[in-house]
Image (cartoon, rainbow, N blue to C red; front, side):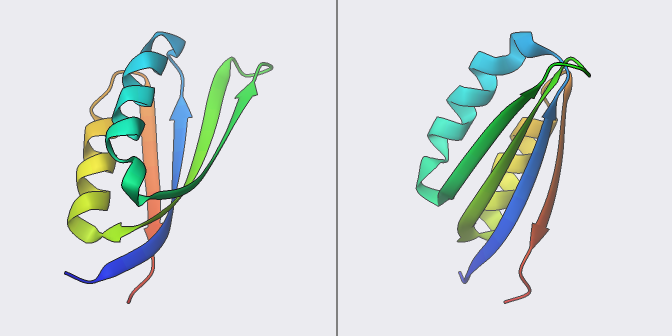
Length: 81
């Protein structure tokens, strides 16, 4: 399957999910080319941005699992080819 390049944005409203998020990101570390995380204390959230390079199946599996976590919102933009 063809690899795609993309960006994934994660907003964490429930900080108690941090361990689960980090465990999932570790499981998919082979497709994560870069990661930046920022606590936004004024809004009491954390924002994580990922640069990903993987198949659509891999990217979708990761974002799907992240999106199922309580208090976590995920959006992605993936290259067309």
